[in-house]
Length: 90
Image 1: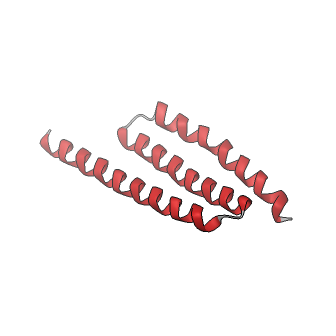
Image 2 (image 1 turned 60 degrees about the vertical axis):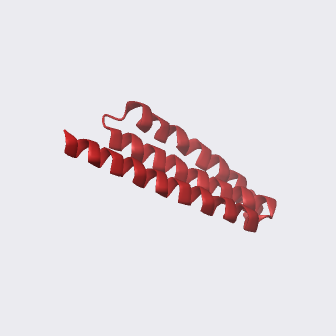
Image 3 (image 1 turned 45 degrees about the vertical axis):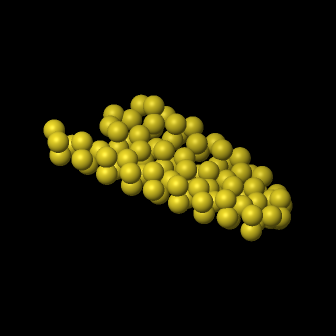
């Protein structure tokens, strides 16, 4: 049961990513584009965990996902802080 569910879940995650790409390309505001990037990062983390479960090496993929999530969080905070400063200067 689980072995047939994982490929479907993996392809489901891959199918959702173009919706976020549309949000990035057509977003009317910088913050909408940032939300799209965070959505892609979240789906990538879930995708990596599903791949790790499918391959039976979940512990290695969780370490990779934690590092990627940390980079995503720090990057989002840095962009948000930069945009806040830029808005206050204008």
